[in-house]
Image (cartoon, rainbow, N blue to C red; front, side):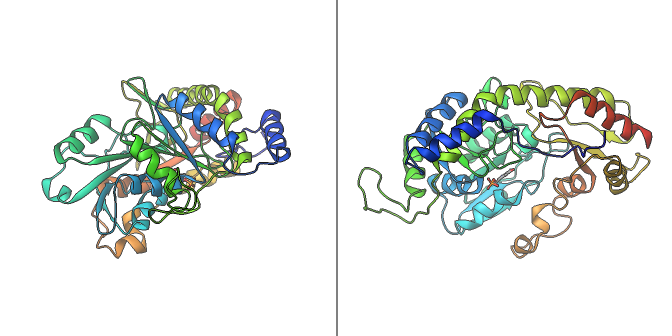
Length: 369
Ligand SMILES: *Cc1c(COP(=O)(O)O)cnc(C)c1O
């Protein structure tokens, strides 16, 4: 147990390396047939009509929000307990994030009792599938239907997750994925937008290439960016996608071992697993309450000394960062998210974490419990 057990580690094999070499030798390096093939395979995996490759999860979110008609001064409802890219993408369009507190158990946005005053002139809901658990679909759909809002799904952490047999990325009008190195599958950097809506698909395709009307070269109909994916990234993505189900199964098995091993530890709350939801554990995140013998920080130091890397996702909810506070948010606005930030600790759960590793990590926690 001398080697550090990392919190995240990409699973790259010979197939990925060969695929990159092949595309490097092919003479076509960006937005070519390999990207198109990756898009087809990804749409097939998600069971949706269209998948459009982009160069990051952030650009997927930016493009998806644009394609849903979000523009300057619009409001978009989202969670304060997520990676910063979620809310930054809203700002990138000149729109305003309207934060709503999270559900205590799922840690996802809580739209159970959404007030009318909050949703007036809101354009869309940007719902995040945090840590690999799809957002609370019924509540989000109910709010969206009641107030006629678009749903954008931030599925950057939930490749392969399911709700009632429906795959992550297909639960709203448009889904956004990231293939950053710590995600369930990776292309180094990269992203994907998924949708069943042809007009959203076309808008994203224009947005990733400077607003070009894609039937007509060098004809631009609105502002766009260079969000294109490289052939090498797509080549890695095709190989990774073949392995996604096995990665997910291993993450779920690892999570089950933790759930069993930590069930009776006082002061540790293990992640909720809900009926009809397949949680894919991009992160295995427990909560350390006051009842635990050590503070969360001391536990993290203890584990680090044992060669176990942990992480805090996220140490501060978004509304308490400077550029969001300037929109008028304050400490105390979202008590559930603020408490989660003080309690969460993520343990290594990725496919390269072995059963012995998990047993060792559980024992190392119990040692100080
Ligand atoms: C990783 C992530 C993103 C951003 O993806 P990048 O590829 O890093 O741009 C957005 N939202 C969530 C929830 C993420 O985890």
